[in-house]
Image (cartoon, rainbow, N blue to C red; front, top):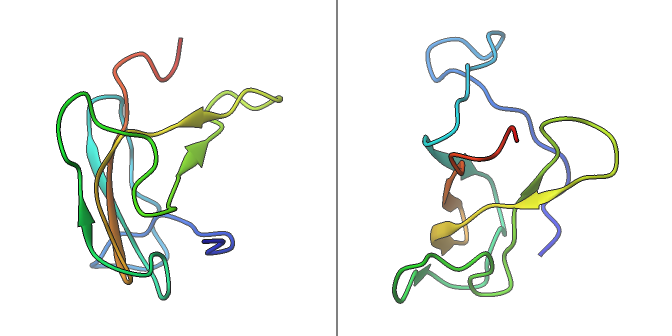
Length: 87
């Protein structure tokens, strides 16, 4: 599902971007992110759940990394920022 672009925001202040770090669990909130709620079936965590995939480009350029997913639902996706994300 293409959810379009998004930015990370603090719940307390929508103008202040959050600091993110490798090893963190992050949640993405929106509408129509997935067609149904799907938890990860096992570890290692999959990078696609219910046709949902989140890719990040932490270093710029053409290198995109798919994040391991814990959970995907219509209005929330939980993912892991891998420890080696900035390598």
